[in-house]
Image (cartoon, rainbow, N blue to C red; front, top):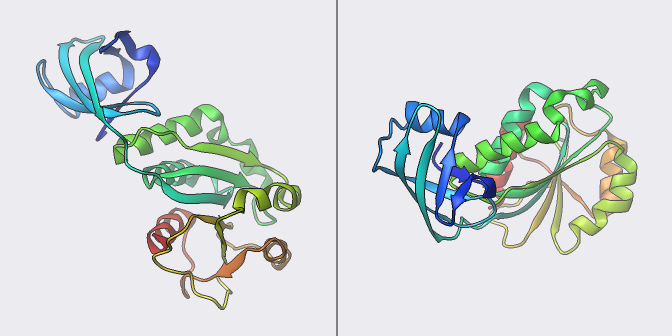
Length: 235
């Protein structure tokens, strides 16, 4: 981890934290840190700074913490994503979080297998864990909002117009005639379908509320590749 993410219940005083479990193991086994050394830390949804190790034992570590700067700015991108296969969901969430995406909505589509919605990887606890991993990688602290919507049409007709208001509304579609724009200077709401793409009726529903289908070329990319590719192209 490039940043140790702290939470309010880690603090044992105003400027000292006590850590156990995964974070302790990482500091001890990966950083190979010792007492007196300092590491990059940040408080969830707050500032970043340094933590100086004052005690490092087998069961816990303690650090004196000084937070003195803001986290990196968020990416002005709202991601609407057809629910991917469970075995790639973790990578997609961690990767999108590391890019600075702060709102992710996982939606249904005709080509999304119904069984995906019962995966334990979709639990709030797992989504939070993957978000934390993304933040630690990117030295960020602001947790994303991750929502799920199992009904495509009500979401598109009733909720998505307000989500996309005052943003550039795009849907990635392999058969689109228009290329995905580059170096956008405005917020974007981006819809990405399943690996087989949205069916024609779904694309038509999105077009009716103002979304422009855009192509990223002839290659068909996996979801975990398409998300960072599109984010990098847009910004």
